[in-house]
Length: 168
Image (cartoon, rainbow, N blue to C red; front, side, top):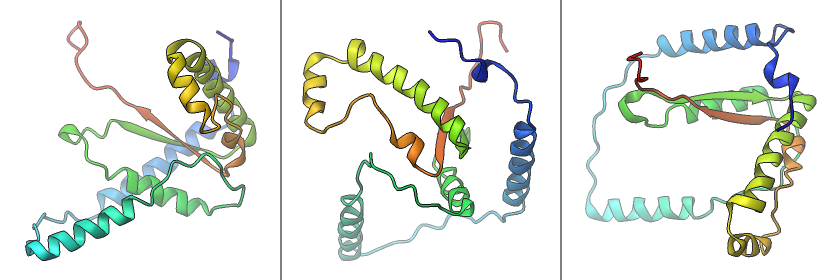
């Protein structure tokens, strides 16, 4: 494994402080939001079928995207995307995720290096030969140049909750 000082060293440029300050501001905004009690809507069978079909049609347009534009996106749009993702249901409302937005080109390059290193291991060692051959038809491999092209990367980190053997 390569030594990556930028992974192991503490941030020294105030970035961490700015991130914490922004997260605190967003948390304050969320705390002041009023609770909206759940009131289920009841639909006729005909309306349920209409809505189900419309939802299917919308979801059927979803695609896995591997080609990204370098066109700028307002940071506020990214913030709302993350805010929306944060409303996803989670067991016991633990919300076991942390979102990190990466915009700086050098950091995006470093993220790409890490991801490509792991993906290369996937292709060469973890995945079966049949899988590798099947995926070739989609013209995809472990090279992820789009990670440096997109104006922002949104990294999602899982937080693990539970008890350690020590009881903590």
